[in-house]
Image (tube, rainbow, N blue to C red):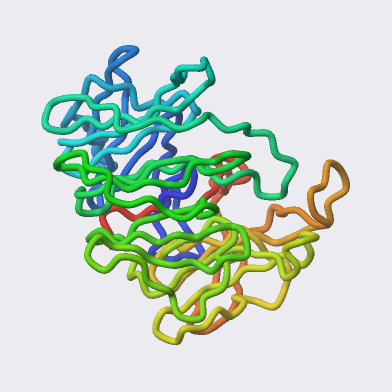
Length: 332
């Protein structure tokens, strides 16, 4: 299974996927091959986790906290697999009355404000929008990365250790995208600017990632952690020639997935990606082209491009279900 945007698909055959369900107005984590967990507010200051069976439709509440995980930025917070820890953003103000975003952690049965940072301006006339807020627990639940380092005077991302709420690491300015490994606590940092990506872990510190170049837009880590797929412009300064790429950790290479205009690539299972075609942009354009309505699939080992065939009404375009890196949780 893969959750892309708000649509959950069976991708046993990634060229002919089957819609399992839509998950609207909340956030979900895949839990087993037949279940997922999602968040449900219980009050203005409370949230619970509901375990949902896809096959039977049965539901049960498995965790809850005195914390609102529907954040003031419009996104949702995050929680650990065991339900013991949760994190969220809340709106605040500093001593001068300026708007801030507070980072809150629920751990050891109590809420703690970890820190706050200036609330950034969020207007952007740009092809893929601004980088999204970052708030995520590592796969093992030991660390939390948070922040929203965009705009003038942006505050870098931070990592905290969950067990004692200790500030562990501050990332470099400009490192505005971050995602954890599917197991353990290795953090990948993918700035949209010209800086190359790198990795961080509490044991080894920062580490370069071979000859990797900028993972510019919506990097997607494969379920087996062997590759990262991403979208980038051949000429970033003028947003020309958008295409899709993948970085291969074993080969230390960053080839194009296909030598054609394509965008918004994401892994849907080991070795398989989905991505969109590109069509000319005719109005309100931030670049010469925009994503079309034709979705492609490719097995990267063969390089053969296929049109994805959905049953009537089940495509992301028909569902208006959004898009983003595919989610696999736990890793499968």
